[in-house]
Length: 179
Image 1 (tube, rainbow, N blue to C red):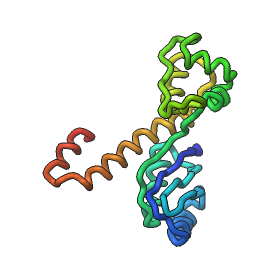
Image 2: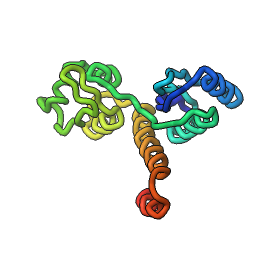
Image 3: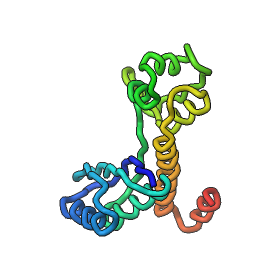
Image 4: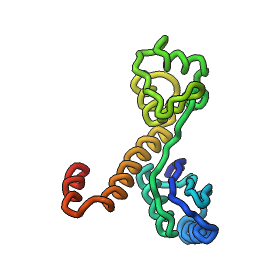
């Protein structure tokens, strides 16, 4: 078994009673492996969950959060800045900057998911896949698996939550696309 690190995003309000219920759910299972950071606006529950694979870890965490009566709005993988990419890939920050600008490496470095003037954030799923494809740096395959699984589970949660808002006659059309 491996340990997978990820965040479950939740809708607010999240009360102290909700957090207590979450700890009860976690303690009744395999133990407390999460740290909630949430309030009346919502927030995140940060997990380090042991499982056979990332999908099992993430889906079981979503089930636990929902069993505590907290609404799940998504799952987030690591979003990383250049310095974090360098640390994870075991290369220099300068090397990462060259990859980002296309001055070195094979090109086609993933675009930032959150562009900023300083310290744009990139999807670790996309970056780790690019690193593996380009055969550059040291890829943490557990982190890469987690990042990819987060994207898939987050999309499933988005579809599930969106279906609730659709008229019944349109739901089969969406389900057909994801089946």
